Image (cartoon, rainbow, N blue to C red):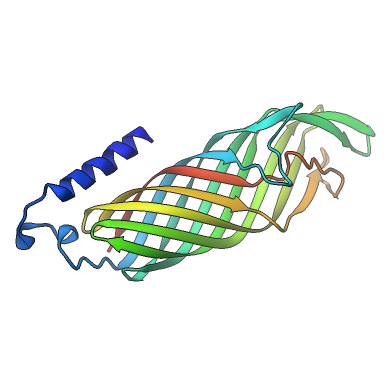
Length: 231
């Protein structure tokens, strides 16, 4: 994140200190700059469990620790002030909690969460306020997500949750070239419709046999620096 902040600061200084003549400036520093076209965006990010009324993320038994994630998006920007597209979001968490789970054989078993993988695909739209080479966006996405929590047990077990998901993401971008921009993005995901299940050691699916309400399933946040190209 310090590198991204420094890069954005350098881009802003370059904008302010650029040639005074409009004709001498690159296209993204001229008045009337109107970026449009197909775009691709990549956002490496840190991932966090986001506490809500239903998910505390941290209890006396442990917590869902932060780790890594990111977004990849492609789309189309027909006008300066709007962009739409499709995207993939992936995140990992580092849980360290444990709990008792009811299985057929044995009837009760202590299991320990050892990792968490979260994957989602989304359709998104982004209204944009353009101020010269600077874009201020408010992105909204809707889609489908799956959460996978492998558990450490004498016989491997996996907790899974999937369902409808949506997110809101403030975005700050600075064009450093007419076709390239750098920025910062924070995405906050809410997963309101969830089906949970546990997969036993024999591969069978046992629905609604476990519900660890404090820490699973989770709502997550991704915050990171990003790069985008438009052409």
